[in-house]
Image (cartoon, rainbow, N blue to C red):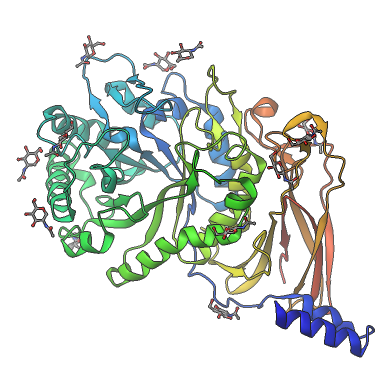
Length: 537
Ligand SMILES: *[C@@H]1O[C@H](CO)[C@@H](O)[C@H](O)[C@H]1NC(C)=O
Ligand SMILES: *[C@@H]1O[C@H](CO)[C@@H](O)[C@H](O)[C@H]1NC(C)=O
Ligand SMILES: *[C@@H]1O[C@H](CO)[C@@H](O)[C@H](O)[C@H]1NC(C)=O
Ligand SMILES: *[C@@H]1O[C@H](CO)[C@@H](O)[C@H](O)[C@H]1NC(C)=O
Ligand SMILES: *[C@@H]1O[C@H](CO)[C@@H](O)[C@H](O)[C@H]1NC(C)=O
Ligand SMILES: *[C@@H]1O[C@H](CO)[C@@H](O)[C@H](O)[C@H]1NC(C)=O
Ligand SMILES: *[C@@H]1O[C@H](CO)[C@@H](O)[C@H](O)[C@H]1NC(C)=O
Ligand SMILES: *[C@@H]1O[C@H](CO)[C@@H](O)[C@H](O)[C@H]1NC(C)=O
Ligand SMILES: *[C@@H]1O[C@H](CO)[C@@H](O)[C@H](O)[C@H]1NC(C)=O
Ligand SMILES: *[C@@H]1O[C@H](CO)[C@@H](O)[C@H](O)[C@H]1NC(C)=O
Ligand SMILES: *[C@@H]1O[C@H](CO)[C@@H](O)[C@H](O)[C@H]1NC(C)=O
Ligand SMILES: *[C@@H]1O[C@H](CO)[C@@H](O)[C@H](O)[C@H]1NC(C)=O
C-alpha cells in the first residue's frame, strides 16, 4: 500500500503527461500463467444436495424436475459438463430403509434438533428412481455411517446392506461417479443434532468402521453390480470432515490407514464461511470480504498440502456461505452471489479441484428452490447467478486447459482473477464487493437516495496492445436484492422460461472496451461483477 502511494506521488510530481503515470495504479496481469492453478478438471462447478431433499430437486421418472434440469444444463453448456451431484449431508446419516414405504421419503422434523430437515428419515425403494431424471448427470451417493456403524442401531447396518443394490442398479456405469460412507464423521460424537458416537471416539475407531462399511459395500456390489467394481468406477470420496478444527484430524486418519484399500479417489472436505446465527456475521464483514474467504479456505489449503504426498485430488464435497442452512437477508441475497464468485475462484486458484455447493429444500443459501413450499417460492435464487459467472469464467473445461490465477488487489472488498486457456490469458474477472444497498434499512419502500459508486480497474495486459475486449456483467439493483438479477443481459429465472436462459430487453449487452498500449480499463459499479473476454488473440 505505502509503496504504491509513493510510486503514484513520485510519478505524478514528475509529469502528469507521462502515459505510464497510470501504470503504477494498474494491476499487472501476466500474459502466461503465473501463480496459476493446474488445469481445472471438468465439472468444477458442482452441487451437493441434502439427502432428504434429493427427490424434491430431481423429481422421479413420472414427474421429473425439469426446472432443476434446465439450470444444470445452463452450467453444462458453459463448462462442457453438467455439474456433478453429491447426494448427502446430515440426513444421509439419519436415512433408514423401509422396503414397504410407498413414498420416496418419510421424514419427521424434530424442531429441538433442527427446524430445517428431518432428523428421523425413512426412504423407500422409489427414492432411487430420482436418479433417473437428469440426463448426462453423474452422482455420488452417500451411505449412512452414523447409524450403520453403531451396533445399538442394527437397522443402520441393515440399511447399508439393503440399499447398495438399489443405488448401484439405479446409477449404473453411466451415472455413478463414486460413493461416500458417512457425512462429517468428525462431528458424530459431538453433533448438536444428536450424537451417535461416544465422546472419546477417535480416528482409529473411525477408520476401522469406515473400512468395515466400505468392504461391506464392495461385497454387496460384487453380488448386485459386479460391473461397477472396476478401478474406473469403484471408489470413494472421504473423509468428508466438517473441516474446521474438530477432534478427528485428517492426517491422523490417513496415518491410521483410511486408504488401506486404495479406493479413495477424492479427499473431500466441507467448508462454511461462518454460521447463520453466529454473532457478528454480516454481508460485508463475512461474505463480501476477500480476507474472510482466504482465511476460511486456508485450513483446506494446509490440509491439502499435508496430504499432497498421497497424490489424491482434494475437493470441497460440501460447502456454502453460512452453516445451519444460511441466514435470510445474507445467504439468499445478491451479495451472497458475489461472495460465491470470489469463493469459488479463490478455491480454484489455490488448488481445490472441485467445489460442490450444498443445498436443500427451503435452505436460505440454495442456488434454487426446486418446488413450491409454504416457506419458499419456487425459483432461481441469487447464488445460482454466482455459479453461472464462475462457469463462464471457467469456460469449456473439456475442450480447453484452463488455469485460474488470483490477481492480488489492495482492498479486501474486491477480488480479481485471470483465466488462461492453453497457457494464454483469455478472461479477467473482477468482483467489486463494496456493499451497495438499493433499499434503506432493508425495506423496498425506501430506496437508497445515494447514487451507486463505481470503481475503475486498470489492468496491464502486455500481450494485448490493440484489441476489443468484450465485457459481461452480473447485475442487480444492490447487494440486498433477492430478485431482478441478470448475467450478460440474461435471466435464468423460473417464472420466465423455467430456468432456461432468456435475453432481457432492459439490460444493455455487447459492451466492449479497448485494450490499447497494453492497458485495459473497466468501470465496475459497487456490488457487481464483470468478466473481460479477450477472445482469440
Ligand atoms: C506469486 O505468489 C507469491 C506468493 O503468494 C507472491 O509472493 C508473488 O509475488 C506472486 N507472483 C506474481 C508474479 O504474482
Ligand atoms: C413421483 O413424484 C410425485 C410428486 O412428488 C408423486 O406424487 C408420485 O407419487 C411419484 N411417483 C412415484 C412412482 O413414486
Ligand atoms: C414402513 O412403511 C410402512 C408403509 O408406510 C409402514 O406401515 C411401516 O410402519 C413403516 N415401518 C417403519 C419401521 O417405519
Ligand atoms: C462391521 O460393522 C457391523 C455393524 O456395526 C458389525 O456388526 C460387524 O461386526 C462389523 N465387522 C467388523 C469386522 O468389525
Ligand atoms: C450409539 O448411538 C447412541 C445414540 O443413539 C450413542 O449414545 C452411543 O454412544 C453410540 N454408541 C457407539 C458405540 O457408537
Ligand atoms: C482410540 O480408541 C480406542 C478404543 O477406545 C483405543 O483402544 C485407542 O488406543 C485409541 N487411540 C488413540 C490414538 O487414542
Ligand atoms: C486397480 O487399482 C489397484 C490399486 O491402485 C491396483 O492394485 C490394481 O491392480 C488395479 N486393477 C486394475 C484391474 O487395474
Ligand atoms: C474481513 O474479514 C477479516 C477476517 O475475518 C476481518 O479481520 C475484517 O475485519 C473483515 N473486514 C470487514 C470490512 O469487515
Ligand atoms: C407447511 O408445509 C409442511 C410440509 O408440507 C406442513 O407440514 C405444514 O403443516 C405446513 N404449514 C403451514 C403453516 O401450512
Ligand atoms: C434507518 O434506520 C436508522 C437506525 O435505526 C434510523 O435512524 C433511520 O431513520 C432509518 N431510515 C429510514 C429511511 O427508515
Ligand atoms: C446495508 O444494509 C445493511 C442492512 O440493513 C446495513 O447493515 C449496512 O450497513 C448497509 N450498508 C451500506 C453500505 O449502506
Ligand atoms: C429487467 O427485467 C426483469 C424481468 O422483467 C426484471 O426482473 C428486472 O428487475 C429488470 N431489470 C432492470 C435493471 O430494470
